[in-house]
Amino acid sequence: MADAAPSRLDRRKARTRAALVHAAQTFIADGKTNVAILELTQAADVGMGSFYNHFSSKDELFKAAVEDALDRHSAALDELTRGMDDPAEVFACSFRLTGRLHRRHPQLSKVLLNTGLAIATADYGIARRARRDIQAGIQAGRFTVSDPELALVMAAGATLCLGQLLHTQPDRDDGRASDQIAEDLLRTFGIPADEAHHICRRPLPELDRLLPHTTA
Image (cartoon, rainbow, N blue to C red; front, side, top):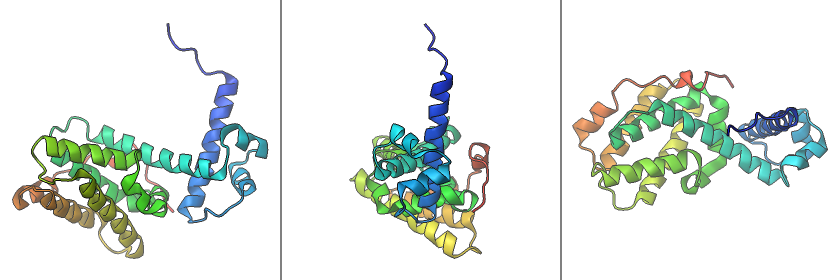
């Protein structure tokens, strides 16, 4: 039996929740997390009572906002790397695309950066995905790292520091920088230098196909 279509009430609740999440993402991107719930509801253009229909606290909303942003990016990467058989290529492609989002999708980038190093140990979004890809690379014999969690720490740290660098150095070529760090990570993970270079110079799928280009 097919699931029933969402009711008008369900759709209204979903719009309200989405508006709150979007408002929270905007505050996070601006580095303004010390705000009152009233400011969040005003930014979302919803009533105070509506907030508590969806979230028990501001912290719960901010957590949901971060998870939503990172899960959307992770889902986009899954779609764009669909059909790739080599775990090393999947990892490199995902890193190269993520590096490019810092300029193409500054709000999503700033949500990522302002979430901080907790990303490295998260069990959702791009951290969960990167952990999966690193483990796949180890199991396939492509990566020689002994501890996937430490490999994830290196990748997460590189992602965050690259994003900050690209925001503070707007003239730096984001694509070239992303590709070089991806290549260096592959070499660190055990891929021969020539092969790592070749993998990180392959044409990329178009990230904007799933995440339209935005401006700050």
